[in-house]
Length: 177
Image 1: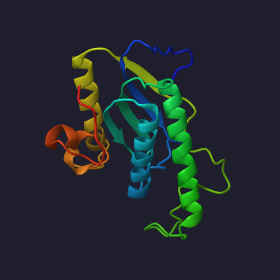
Image 2: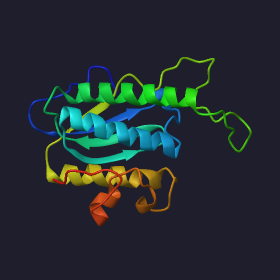
Image 3: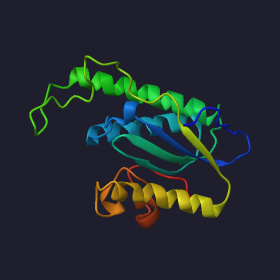
């Protein structure tokens, strides 16, 4: 995110948030990591009381379309979410037995010789103020796994709100607007 970008809170807008793993690394590349992220997002959502309109969890970044939380700001929500996910991912790494990838390299997301940062420090925040912008952001998020060639169709990527909008159910609930 560019320095000096202004965040506008308190107007009741939805916020389209984008945040990345440290150095755009694939720390969310496993099913376990993405499931853990969604589980922690649900916990934080319950604690801070925000509407979740849409989401997609990608291997190296996340997009959320959310309302302003009842408690605090979107910045605080992301701080708590990012801290909890990073902590639990590190705990899981210590508890899981070592495994190998197909190429024989360790499957660990973290290289012990490098800093233990999990997330980039900043995030992008765009205020969404119209239904056409809501639709645009949802379409962008839901197409992201296809554009990145992770799947052939959005229905194949369960870590997004696409199925909520097409079948009415998904991995976690969303708040339709």
